[in-house]
Length: 465
Image (cartoon, rainbow, N blue to C red; front, side):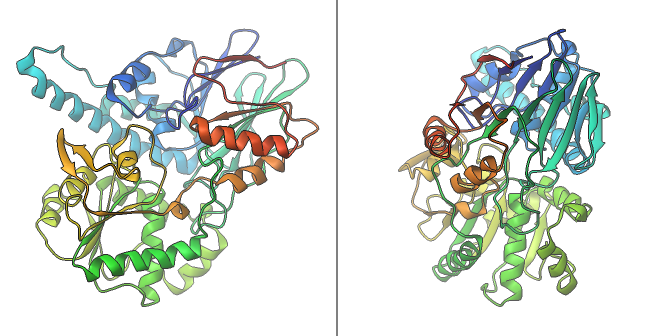
C-alpha cells in the first residue's frame, strides 16, 4: 500500500491524500481546495496528481472547503465513484459546494471583465454551481461508529472528531497483507467547546495522518474567552465603534452566536444590534438545528431553558445584499459576523474596507489565518492592507481570540494522539500545519515516546508495509 501527500503538506489548506493499493485501486482522503496566493492556488487546484476517473472512492472527513472544495472539479474531470461522509457532512456540503461554485463563477466573471482591456487570457471558473449540484449524487451519507465498505477489501469507520458538525476521524483497514490500518484525524476538535461533543478516541492504527494546526500553542479556556468577548464588545461600543468578525460560515459562526446568546441571557451584553451577514451561514445554521444527534449534553440541557440557542432579541440574520450594504451606512455600535473566515472573499471584505481605518472599530479574529491571506495580515497587524486592490491603513483595534478555534491546541493534540496504541503505531505524519507548529508538535510527540514523526512535503510518497 502506498500513501502520497498531495495537499495540506506543510501548509494548512487543500487537504488531499492519496492511498493506492497494490492492485492499483485508489482512494482519496479528502479533496480540498487550496487557498492562498491566487497564482499558486490556481496551479495547485487545476493540476490533479492522478486522473480523477482513476480514483475508486473518496472518504471525506468534513465539509470545510479546504477539505471538500475540489470535489465539484473532480466530478467535472471524470470522477464517478462514491464519496463517503457523515450525514451532517453531506447536508453541509450540499450548501457549501453550491455556494463555492457560485463564487468560482462570479470570481472568473469579475477577473475577465477587469482584465479584458489588457487582453489577458480568459479565466475559466474552477467549477460551476452545476458541477457542485452534480457531485452531490456521488455522496453516501453514513453514521458514526458503523463500519462501511469503501471498496472491495477496504473497510472504513467514522468516529466523531468534534471539529464542526459532522466532522469525523477516519480509520481504513485494508485486507491485503495482514489487515493494515491507516488513521486520518481530519481536523481534531478543541475539547470542552459548546455545541458539539468532544473528539472520540480513534481505533488502534499502524500509521496516523494527523493535523498539526496549533502545534506549540495553547488556547485560552472557552469560559474566559466568552467573558473576554463581552468585554471587547462593551469596550468597542463605548467608543462608538463596530466589532467586525471574519468567521467561517460553518462552525465558527454558530459557536459565536451561541456564546452571544448565552451572554445576552446573562445580561452581559450592551443593547446593540448583532448581525450575521452571510446567506450561507444562515442556511448552515438551519442544518445545525436539524442535527441534534451531534450536540453535546450541555447544549441539550441549555435547549430546555432556551429552545433557540442560535438566536436572541438583538440578533438579525442577513440574507439580502441590500441589507448588507445598509450596515456600512449605519454609524452606530454593532457586531457584524461575516464570511469568509480568512477574509479572502465575500461580504466580510466590504465590512473590513469600511472599518479598518476607523480607530473606534475592532477587528476580532477568532480562528487560524493561513499565510498570505488578508486575515493573516490583520493578525500580523501590518500597518497597511490591500482590500479590493486598494491600500487601507490599519487603524482599528485588532483582537485575537483563539479559544473559539475549532482545532485542538498542542496539549489537545498530544492528548488525542497519546491515547493511541503505541505498541502498534509505527509512524505519525503531520499535515495541515505550517513548519513551525509542526516542529513544536513533533518535539512534543518525541518527548511522549513517538519516535517516528514526519512532516511530508507535497508529493512525498510513503510505502506502508
